[in-house]
Image (cartoon, rainbow, N blue to C red; front, side, top):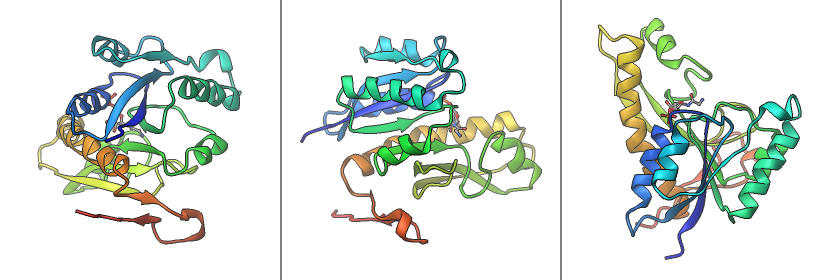
Length: 212
Ligand code: GAR
C-alpha cells in the first residue's frame, strides 16, 4: 500500500493532530503524517510533532500582514518540499484564500466542533448550550471557500447533559473528535470518499464509492 503523504495545519494545542499521528503509526493506516505546519511559533502541538519525529515548519502569518496570497504561497512551498498529497486542518485558526482552497479541492479536510451546518464559526459549545441543543458533536468536511461549509465526510454525535458547562461539553466533543478525525482521514486516503463536481451540484458532492 502506498501511503498518502499528509500535512497537518495547526495553530495551537494540537490534540487532533496528535490523534492523527497516533492513528498513522498503525502499519495498515493509509496515510503518513509527513509534515506539521503551524502559523504560530509557540503552538504547543509543534513539540508533540517533533517528539514523534515528524518534520515541522512554522509559517508565521504576522509578517505577511494582509497579504493572504503570499501566506498561502509560503504554505504551498512547504507542501511542495514535502511532496504533500492531502492536507488536514486541525485547529488551524486562519482563513485560506479561495484560490488556495480550490487548488486543494477534494484533498483538504477540516474538523469543526459542531454538527454542521449548525454552529459554524467560533464558540460552538457555548452557542449549542444557549440554543438548548440536546445533541451536539463534531464534523469532518472537505474544505470549501466558504468557511465551515464544505461537503461533510463524517460526523460524531455527542449528548448534551442538562448541567453541562461549555468546558464540560467541549471536553466530551473533543474526545469524539479524536476518534472521528482518524476515521475520516482513512476514508479519504483510501479513496472511499471522494469529492466530485461539487460546484456543479447543489447536493453534497460526495460519492461514497465504498468497496468494503
Ligand atoms: C478543536 O476542537 C477543533 O475542532 C477546533 O479547534 C480545536 C482545536 O483543538 N477547530 C475549529 O474550531 C475550526 N473552526 P486541538 O488543537 O487540540 O486539535
